[in-house]
Structure formats: C-alpha cells, structure tokens
Image 1 (cartoon, rainbow, N blue to C red):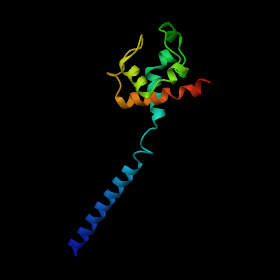
Image 2 (spheres, rainbow, N blue to C red):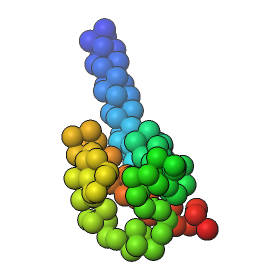
Image 3 (tube, helix red, strand yellow):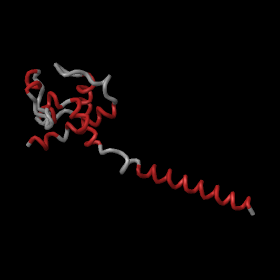
Image 4 (spheres, helix red, strand yellow):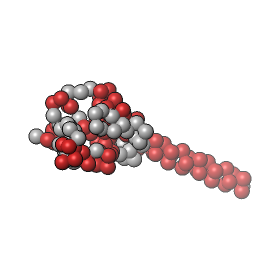
Length: 121
C-alpha cells in the first residue's frame, strides 16, 4: 500500500512540474519578455540620449558632433539593415556599439528609432 501511495505522489510531482514548465514556456513570449520598444527605449536612454535626447532630436552635445535628428525623414527612411550597420559600426562622430551591445539589443534600438518619427511631431 505504501508503494502505491509513493508512486501516486511521484506521479503528482511529475505532473505538477510538467504543468509549471508548460505554463512558463507559454508565457515566455508574452508576460515574461519585455516589449521590444521598452527594451529599446531603455537602451536608447542609457546609450544614445546624451547626443540624441529622449525624443531623438540632437542635444547641444549632439549638435556639436553633427548628430542627425532621428525622427527626420533621412533617418526614418533607412532600412533596418542600414540602421543596424550604423549602430554596430558607428558613422561619422558616432561610436560603434557592436562590442558593447548584443545583436538583439541593436535590433531593439532600431525598432525604437523607427518609433521616433511619430514622437517628434
């Protein structure tokens, strides 16, 4: 009888662990993952806002370095690949970020930069 009870408890534990894992996996892409824009915004504030301000317009420092308005048509018309290349390798006075940021973080920044045209107006 004790053996049956032990097997029943073990089965219950396995089912519980399986249910928790299934729940975790199903929520991973929604509740547990930060939205890309939010991640991009956080990265932007810590890496880009010194020159491009919170809304993408050049700060005094950015103006002295000829930083573009990120909400402008010339920037917004660039493809994802073009912006990834600029962020990764730098351009003009802008430093390269490929050694500081992961590809996923660079992708998040690109997605965030593409939202700036709406915020600038």
